[in-house]
Image (cartoon, rainbow, N blue to C red):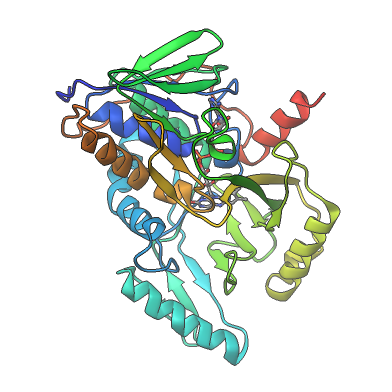
Amino acid sequence: MATGSASAVVIGGGVVGCAVAMELARRGAQVTLLERNPALALEASGTSSGILHTGFDSKPGELETELILRSAALRRPLLDALGVPVLECGAKLTPAGDEELAAVDALEANARANGVEVRRGPAGELEVPGEHVTDPVACTYAWASAAAGPGARILLDTPALGVEATEGGVRVQTPDGTVEADVAVDCAGLHGGEFTGDGPVVKPRKGEFLVFEQPDEPVGQISLPVPDERTKGVLVFPTLDGRVGAGPTAVDQEDPTDWSVSDEGEAFIRERLALRHPGLAGAPAVFRYAGLRPAGVDCNYVIGPASTPGLITAAAIRSTGLSASVGIGEYVAGLAAGMGIGLGEPEPVTAGAVPGPPPRSPWWRRTADYMAAAAP
Ligand SMILES: Cc1cc2nc3c(=O)[nH]c(=O)nc-3n(C[C@H](O)[C@H](O)[C@H](O)COP(=O)(O)OP(=O)(O)OC[C@H]3O[C@@H](n4cnc5c(N)ncnc54)[C@H](O)[C@@H]3O)c2cc1C
């Protein structure tokens, strides 16, 4: 066991909260993780593209980039130790025309500035061998299991209702009573700050996806478009269960309970597919799902002490939180240690039991099924 003496409450059982809980527990903290839903990873973390990004296209010097790169350096032994499935397929970005070629040249330079391995192909294509696909729900459960191994308590169906400073730390209210700790970390995604009034404004940015059976010419690699200012664009990627995902869209909305896929969203994805994957553009979809990115208003990756003493915010982790999660966990542990919380060195991971039934349906339909069943 690590020799820390700290106690911590982590609010939110998405990939960020579970990674933070894992990193604090590995350093000896007594961790309580609160999740308001009846299972982990039912929100943004269970509805992503499931890609473990390298950071090849991230802006050098930003916190997001720093944490993606750090995560990429740290996560392999954790994924192996916890048996997280990974498809080491790599990604390819094929430019169409001179304008895109110039954009791909810039991306190559960006990747090199970030120290990420890339290769150019004869038609100017950019190959990124380190971009991999995982099951984002399995990954979140693995981080939770590695928190439970050294003793973290994971409480499902338990929303945090408020956080207040105490003389020695914080007190978190839940419907079942209060939990006291040295530090609390708000990893509540779209709902971050709601129960404290403390943190950036976060709004949903919907991303819709279509899932297909593999076409005659199978998709074995992540196929990337040239990204725009706002998003990485519509990707096509193989899933671990032998299918193909295509998406996401990027639609800002106000309603954090609307997880539906619109016909316009589907049409947009099919238009994009017609340009690069015509074999998929007219194919029937096996399923369609949407995720809501926790997008900060005029901010991104807001990770630091909140104005409530003893509370750390890890909010507005919009579009790369799966990839950066281990780095975010380490970063938050560093912030907690800097607040004088007694943490030891990280111990090797040990797996423990995560409460609730394990996820059964394929990850890409789990949230949609849950939201449909929960709808009034
Ligand atoms: C469409 C889409 C595509 C994406 N693709 C990728 C990708 O390919 N690769 C990648 O790295 N990232 C990707 N992302 C981004 C990634 O999924 C997010 O950055 C990440 O999931 C954010 O994790 P989180 O834990 O902060 O949020 P969430 O997963 O939303 O978790 C927050 C949790 O807090 C809980 N909660 C809320 N309020 C309370 C409360 N009061 N008390 C207790 N619990 C509470 C919620 O129920 C939820 O479980 C994508 C996201 C989307 C939506």
